[in-house]
Length: 206
Image 1: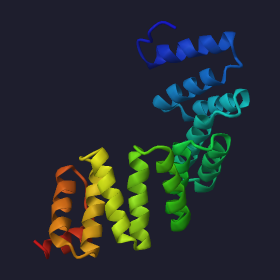
Image 2: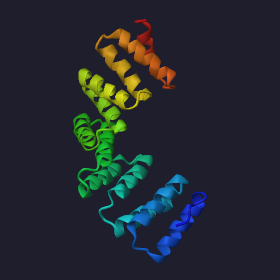
Image 3: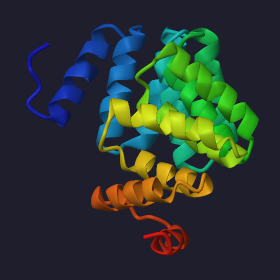
Image 4: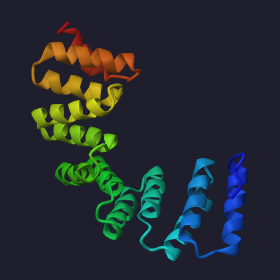
């Protein structure tokens, strides 16, 4: 396929490829991702379903469908699609990470921890899964585990503002105020909006 000059040309090329080979699940999937890129959500969703019809084990397509459901606020459907993704590919870390994220949104902290631990087992550099897991530990009151996990995030990406914010909260809980102040300041310097009640508490420990 010739080098696409822009998204529309790339989409046109994919449509042409599908016209001659409509049973190619990967082409349907690639077209869906390109359509998502230009916010053509309804058409993208149709292409994702077509991708699954052609290639029932295309785990990425289930995850993308889950993402569209999340966008609509349908957590149950998002969870179902991501569970299906991990059913067709057991070691699909992104699916496990998304399951963990949705469980946390639903307040199912134990289920979230379980899925997020699986996600990082399958992908030891899965930044977002570590950050969400650290948050889940914090919600569960497992402060030490939250700190350790956030520090792993910063080892992978030192400028990950969410981890600095979460460390500030965890260190406050642990009464390690110097470290709390340090990570709070770092989160702010990276453009993170720290919650007013946390800022207020931080100020009392400067």
